[in-house]
Length: 545
Image (cartoon, rainbow, N blue to C red; front, side, top):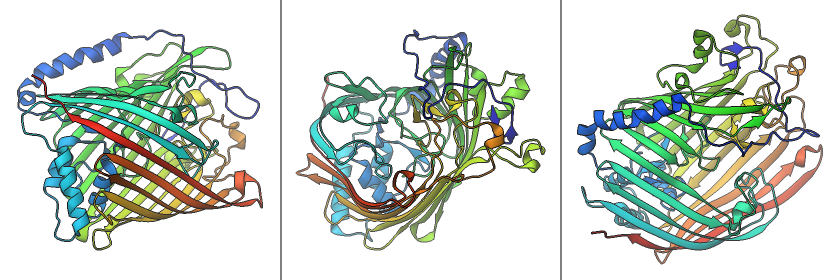
């Protein structure tokens, strides 16, 4: 295990992903296991319902608007431009009712006619009568094409493609209960290197945004699959991010708009170590959020990955009010867990200027912090920050930067102790990089957003899917560690347009100037990377007797 305050001897070495080494693939033959602690967790749900029956009865639930919904690019632009307030800083996704309330209070005095028309259309789409059950069936068909298959344009992988898609999302809200289920087929899933599901199905598809959510005045109990991001908006969170495809989890939230605690827990894929022993893996992510003033939101995040041949769900790692790296010595546990500690903050300054930042610590090479015993171990940390500010006439500008150290999210014990689900990061999916960028977004016409950007990336060879070298070869290098660093300068533009109120068009295009391409010294290249997606939406509110 690695403690954020030092190093503890690693557990057994797992099978690696490096050159010449086979992957540590998940074991898909094991039947679901529901240990006693997990059953205890499920038994808490009815108790929560009974204990909170009074506040829940007076509360109208609201479905979530997914992070990748067609609505969100417009909403995020309005927030960054200072036109509407952020309904839930440092948290995505947002609830449908919260977005509608923010739009109703929009400050439209400083914006043009196109922005005002966009707000009116979003309000008409999102609002629903108070206290009336909400039922929706939203369907779509569409197609997409791209020059490469990975969703991250800065780290392209795969060949050019064309794909079709079709889906239906059912959602409802009755009293304190919100339900949703989104089933779709998309040929693109066969090509995305970060999708680890079964790709030989015909047609290939999946369920996402599928959940049951019990919502009350002082909390929420959630069971299902939904992509989440905890941290600065628009950047993948260090501990909980939407990069991985949505996975089933339990999430419990308790508190008020000023102070709240949250816990997310899930079962990860099993792996086999070098001794061919099946290793069970589990993950919890917790945080404590405070908003003492309207201008300040801060959180303390804590996550734990625990694993082992005989491990199961353990309630000791689900406490959002305790840092989990003290649990092992306190409970005298065997050394088969990894802890991450992070902090995030959002500060709203005058004139609608907003600062956001996050720091994650997974281990520090410092005699002062580790008692002088662990100086051979490099620091494992990440830092990100973003500044948003209005640039006049409804234009929102952003500057951001992030850095993740070479050894982040992994340890000498191998991929079984890496923060990932089926090879894809639960927080960040990449390490050993430095990224900086500036962008602006504007609404030239109603329901059209355009965002030009300039991004610089330095990417080393560090990867959480690789086994770390032995300790003597670690060194104390945060970034690069002598590798040939690939550098990319991107001049790009992204945008979304809604045509005829039912046709959505997304585009992402960029010209990449690459040096040391594929980490080969002196190899330069200029590459166009682009993607376009269009969809026709139909359906909407459903009346039930």
